[in-house]
Amino acid sequence: MSVVTQTEPAAATESAAPAREWRPPSYWPFVIPALVVVLAVIIFPWVFTIWMSLQEWKVGSPTVFVGLANYLRLPTDPRFVEAVGHTLSYTALSVLLPLVFGTLAAVVFHQKFAARGFLRGIFIMPMMATPVAIALVWTMMFHPQLGVLNYLLSLVGLPPQLWVFNPTTVIPSLVLVETWQWTPLVMLIVLGGLAAIPTEPYESAQIDGANFWQVFRFITLPLIMPFLFIAGMIRMIDAVKSFDIIFAITQGGPGSASETINVYLYSVAFVYYDLGYGSAIAVVFFLLIVALAALLLYLRKRLLWTSQLGSEA
Amino acid sequence: MNPRYILGQIGLWLSVFVIVSPAILFFLWMASLSLKFEIDNASYPPVLFPEHIAWKNYADVFASNRFLTYFSNSLVVTGCATALAMLVGVPAGYGIARMAAHKSAIVILIARITPGLSYLIPLFLLFQWLGLLGTLVPQIIIHLVVTVPIVIWIMIGYFETTPLELEEAALIDGATRWQVFRHVALPIAKPGLAVAFILAVIFSWNNFVFGIVLAGRETRTLPVAVYNMISFDQLSWGPLAAAALIVTAPVLLLTVLAQRQIVAGLTAGAVKGG
View 1 (tube, helix red, strand yellow):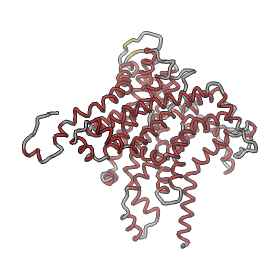
View 2: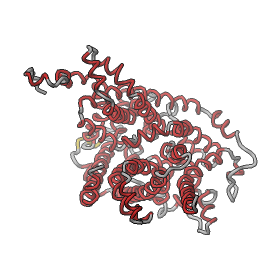
View 3: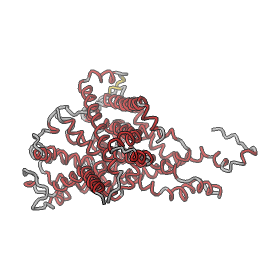
View 4: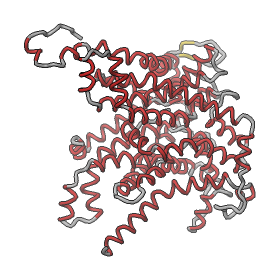
């Protein structure tokens, strides 16, 4: 930052100019303590992880530099490849379902009704509650003999399910929990979007005699698209990383039917203590999340009609 | 009152009911499980309101070995991690907002995207090397990964919206930067402080993944303690559900009491740690 003073007469018109000159150095003391913490707990672990991913590093044995060997091992590791598939299907469902339900819920919460604030507080309880605690109760509800879910199915005449105890239904069952838990976040973001919509389009639509569905499809939906995109992005990041619910309910089972990358990473690093390989998984995992985020951004650009509307919001 | 209005109201309340019921029914069922004796929890069809209420489940949890230790561990870890995060994060949010250092947000974004487990591998080795593993210190430090970005992120947002005129007037009157921050900026940002504090507390309290790796038998926090109860105590649902409810009750209470702050914070940054 050049501190070449501009004490020309022109500068006198800007009364705040002298204060502005001192900005960069004088605000640094505010930031330095946080910078130290961030360096220690965020930046250092990242650098160390990348370095470790190039080592053969198992707890209790000497470390050996192996270059990219840990990374080359990934595509030939069937458990990792399988985990990528589980992660992607789990994520796709855990983004789409909360987006649909969260949007519907936001449309309802956008109306005026009694005790709305209190009911909204109730509605967001699932996402604030301690994940392990709710996972425990869901585990009881999934119980094939004693669980309340099979009882509810029997009330509407459906056959009992094995839920998380069956390899083919375990991922949808976990997605059910994830959707129950995170629909409120989508609702809140979309609700913020609805609040920002001007009333004029609705008034003219009413004059034109549009019905509820037409209003939603042609006015509300395009206008909240930018918010849906943000919600989808956040949901994707959280769903890919989802750990507590899966680990507490199934530990990746039955067998490895619900083992996502994060759960597998836990096993590699802290059950087998293969820290070098675990670090390589962590790096690739991070890159996968960045790639998925880039893909969403690309898809958004492709849908130009929405981004044009979105640039205003 | 035309019929169309009444129909609309009925439709609205019906949709409100449908939307809120999954949350209400779940927590109602959780409470029901925690207040039933085994015989009621194992009955078919299931009983929602039992004839005999098993308060004993709660007494059992509090009497069980180490539950109070775990409770105080959780208090210490969440308390220290939140206090430290406020201490370093609030001034940092102020500095970043005033310097308009928007690129620094990238670090927070990276912290937001990175899976919690990735921090654990290097920090686990570091704590082992420092000989800290039997204490609560590693968990306090690693919880900063969750709390510091939340606090910084929310405080940047708040300080960007607070008016500059007052601060500039105070500077012209000869106040130092620190005095301006302490006596002008901070009092205005009180609502933001509340939001940052509440969210940091909740996400630190709920954190599970750091605990399962770093906590020993004596240093478990409540979520880890509850997880361990699942594996050892699969069949006694009453005390298990009671323990789960005790763990999450403070957070649920906070959610209902401070829902306005929580909503403001979540929609501003949509932060979540781990």
